[in-house]
Image (cartoon, one colour):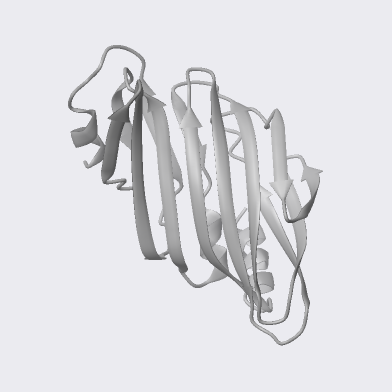
Length: 189
């Protein structure tokens, strides 16, 4: 597996565009996760660029997506993700939107962040929002999402990061059941 990452690193270190920011929302219920992401890329040249990107899905925590919607890019299916291709105008920016729905295998969901490391430089900005039923307890989120809101039966955690280079994927674990007032404290541990 490490040789694949090494090849990806070599390929991406010479691309004429950069991955600048991402905005990701995960909405969880007892059977599925809906992921909605906006990904912004910048053309580093004064020529039109054909951009390509592999977008992996986490298949340890959930099944292959039942539904995949991509805006502002064409895509092809692969066994573990999708390949996106899109055009970026000279010295321009392009925002790609991806939405997918996966059936969960257990009280665990994962969003792949580590692939960001292959771009060699941190994202200028990353925003993450995770929403779930407010009755879930023993919630653990692998990155510090310090904004917490409970409204209309839903608990939402969110956070914005600058110069973001993830050390791990975004992992969410929980238990079903009654409201646990310490859930916000557990998120910060």
